[in-house]
Image (tube, rainbow, N blue to C red):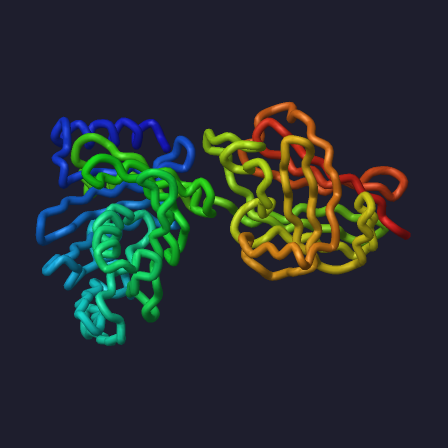
Length: 379
């Protein structure tokens, strides 16, 4: 987040009331020190409305929504996607309208010159909200609790058919969202106020916390700049005996967070070795990685970091997303060495190095540490 955006955030929140009412609030979503989205919401006995601005990706976008309540359930909803200046997104729907009945749900997709209407057999459904719109789940949780179906709530999103949301009870007043794009943790405080949105254990990684005062979303949108691609795809390369060995991976940034054994690479988890799609190792030569013989071909690689050691996992499954790890497809595991980096490495970096006597190494550097797996190229 730029200094200008930090100053603007502070000013815009201070311009609001010193303490928001029990029915209103604002949430700031951050990746480390960088603000990527801000959400505000307002609740009355018959309405739950709000607006969100996000700069996550190629453009700044805004979402405005309103949920209508009657007889203890959501009966209607509207969702609008907008550009930073509040105008409609070109070549996209101007609004989505929902009607939720006891036995069905209808979604009307409104364009500038026409509308598309679809009705689904879904009893007492709720809207599935876009990413960074998490405040309404307090209301959805209350409705789900009354129905006794908190683990399987029929939900209708902006596109597609009916899916199911789950709100899994964790410790205290914390719920885990199931069925949405990310399994975020939602923590509630007194009066059901949303106190924390935690994406640490998802690929989203954003943390949402309450902010005092009312956010001016329109003014914030004017100051925000798109983040661009947060984890660009990079290919590391080296040649051995006239044959290439490459690693293709997503390169996330630290953004002020802890890395090895911390927020980004927690102990005892299987890490995707980067971001987004799984990291892929391609070798034109047979190589010996520790006790693992890797024949020429394409593989995915994963990392497990523990308090007693760090391992590189070579897996035979390819083409999958980085959360789709299946140990049954493991070719083998190799112990890696860990060392301190000379300087802070902000962007996760993989380097393939050619060494004398048909040897090589793959370095995985991030933050203040680098893990290395050594190998021998078979002639």
